[in-house]
Length: 145
Image (tube, rainbow, N blue to C red; front, top):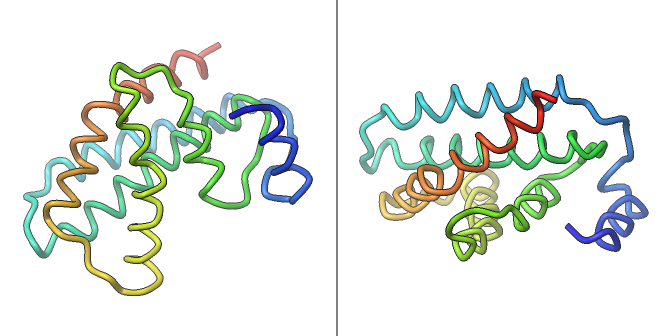
């Protein structure tokens, strides 16, 4: 995230400047790792697509929140978490453009009762396996310092 975006979010009360908190970041990363492993063991079908999508979305959101805590920022909403991940240097940066769409799908599922399709759940599974794990490992190294 650019500094001007951070400043705007702080001014709007969406982000709050705090001390860097590597311990909190590690806890978020451990949770993300554990939950993702469980979700990937579940057989994907029309009944499991919704919870798999929602939980993997939460794992991705936790990566963003951990990154923010490593920068000394606390978020009040999901959007900065996803925005923080947009500048990650992953092998396939184009996939990062899916993050806002995933946020919108999660909100539709969570707040409007719209069911997630098997195909859409497959998209977030693939994202997690190709980008999420890569970001997780990178952030674990940063949080260890």
